[in-house]
Length: 319
Image (cartoon, rainbow, N blue to C red; front, side, top):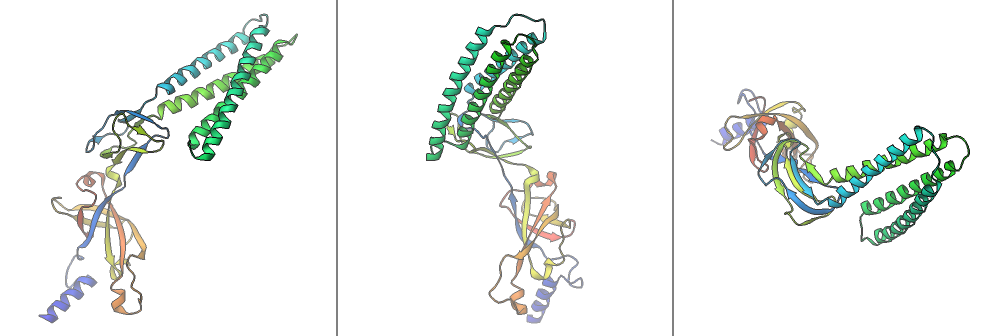
């Protein structure tokens, strides 16, 4: 009996064709690579459109952060773009007397706005250095200061051009510059407005939700965790004697409790290092203790039959 047992063990480890046509089952488990969906901006969670355990499709709405101020800012920048477009169109049309007083008032308003934004920038820099505000708040204050400086420069250029006795080419160039600045500010406002309403980047299972409606969500904090089928993988360990025969792309057959028919997968990663290395690895007995991590990925259709953490048996070769 001892001899028969020894022969069976040797055959299983070496996977000799004379003892078995298939390699012995290797122990492993399923693991998920979760997609954490977060907004780069902070805000109160106003809408949570999904629940844990729900299946969602790509592009389906997940959540919305409160964005009333962002919507108002987008409306303001859109109006500025329309005004700049109208001004440029007027300058390109028939010649008319310059309205220098109006332009000078606009310059005075732009100068006051620049002074306010510079003071706000200094305050945000102090708060950022002290750790009270995020880098996004600092960058927003810097962008506001640069925008007001550009508007002041454009206004001063308009005043200079309006006092010229001949020629309107410089006025038109200044109006074009103001239009470009208005469009850039509008794009920034629209982007911020859109980034507070997130949709699913890929279809899959809603693994978890981390906030409830009405709670404050910090910038960059995940609100929803998704698990697309393509992000489910299998991890199993092979002895040192088998690892040299495994290659990426090689098929494996996976079975688990309650999974039904075996699942086909392909090896996507073979670890170059042993997971457990004894202090001395010079003897044959010590080498037998080495195991290597191997990862395989099933097809998207079969991945839904697996759950992260579920034990599986893996056999090299197609099912």
